[in-house]
Length: 328
Image 1: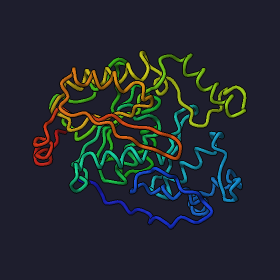
Image 2: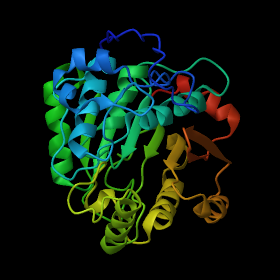
Image 3: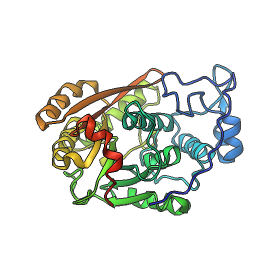
């Protein structure tokens, strides 16, 4: 499956008036902060949301969902050439620098100290791709990888399909698949003879709709904005925010199913929001027979995050992977 090379906008030097984002991966093009004049020039609809920050430079109100969506649309257009990006009301609106960071660290994971694998022969499965389709969009633009994005929610997949329709050059590189079973992860999505270089996931964090709602309200009270109501800056609905067992339960199901795929996936990975979940998940991986388990830390400013990676392949088998070909 061939992928057309993408022209990418050159990174501009970071002006002194916009603060850098400490902790981001060295290849993350957003490490110098947001170049608002350039973003507004590319996407004028962002202009009305830009205001002066306490440090004197331009910013937006990150608690305003319309402002965040406009910023994302401008970033995707200016930095990655993605047109027509939009989201349904209440859909999860992703922070792009952090999402890009996960992908850059995944590239390092695949490289294992050697050259970073690039091109459409590298196949990735995005579990819960969401209405934004953010990981396939960024991963293909940065590294040329091909993606399968799966999701439970038909409306989210319809939104992702609209983004692809607005960017026809992506049609050969990104496929969408519906997961019909809310308790399944890889089952029903991965074909019998199909192989992937990696899987990635941003799992639902909460264990119930009530828990998700109370967490949002607490966040807004902390910001001094009262009740969250319907105006949440990064949004989220249904399966994006909660599932039975919360984050730990979801990842445990992922681990159980990953053992049935075994060596047909080079690296399984997932974000883990709560570090308290790591010991139990690491025990589950040892019980599942994972050959190697890694916890990769990430940071964006004061926010600390990480992803968990595991494989059922020995190092020699991983090195030989690129010569084995990928199932389609």
